[in-house]
Length: 115
Length: 112
Image (cartoon, rainbow over all chains, first blue to last red; front, side, top):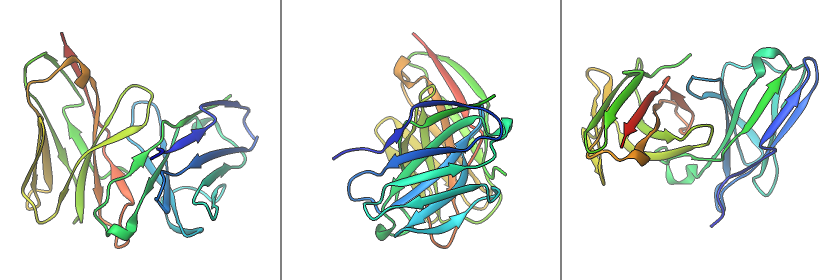
């Protein structure tokens, strides 16, 4: 069973640029969620994808967008990067078919630095 | 916004001692989960407690949930240096599930 993998592990971008982060979900998991974790804080929910459609969104502006592919992998895109977007971006997969009470399986994240 | 708030923010103990951390939240929940994060890495799920449960055990971990007080506690018994990490509580309150709201975490240092 393969776990959740994210790429790249680290990324440095300039303010105003665009970035794409990638995530492969754990085998058998059809739901992918993205979280943003600023330094010293807890993760904040960005959005969730289920069967290739957005299935809930947190308090993030539209310049944060995503995709889910038929193989359940996912991308997070951020346009017009701002300095405050510097954070660890975490992808997590899960199996909602088991009901509401299923844990999340996290990848190790992508560390994004915006200068 | 963060629904869960952990207390204390940081904890330093000797190996072999117990570590207790608390979590408070604001709204009704389906379940509450605890996660561990080693520095700069992803979160690892530790334990999930449903809203109709009051206590749950997993190895050296004991979690309690008091829905009337909207609070939970995580106890790690006989701590080890490898338990050094940040611990987060997360609540699942949505109808569709798995959209977690995390607290700010408790940073635990276990000294050998």
